[in-house]
Amino acid sequence: MKNIQELVPKDKFDTSSIHELRNLTEEEIRPILPELIEWLADFNWPVASEVAKVLALFPNPVIGELKKQFAPEADDDILKYWILVRLIPLFEKDKQLLLLPTLQRIAENPTKGEVLEFVLEEAKIRLRKLIK
Image (cartoon, rainbow, N blue to C red):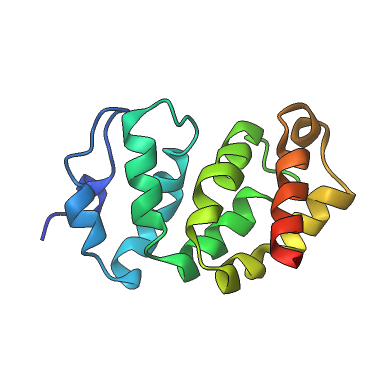
């Protein structure tokens, strides 16, 4: 197999390694999860939806990384928005529930950026869907 870092997309059009990423184990993909998650920053990029589909195959390690992405000090609020809108819905409800404390933190105590970039609104929508 290639060096795992070689499977990370190189640009917004690079979907060449998607098939190989799908075939990794949780342990194999874990080291590159932060870099893969970064590709979700703009769903106008062709690679973003393909990477999201790959990440959805690995909910346990991905959710651990998402908790870091949603920390109040993490300031990529546009990335937070896209994760809420396009990645989290791909997970089964029991996996989404693992993000309940994170969603509640945003709903109750959002950062200024989370308000400005509509993360607060999307977190509330996701909470309503989870609590039904």
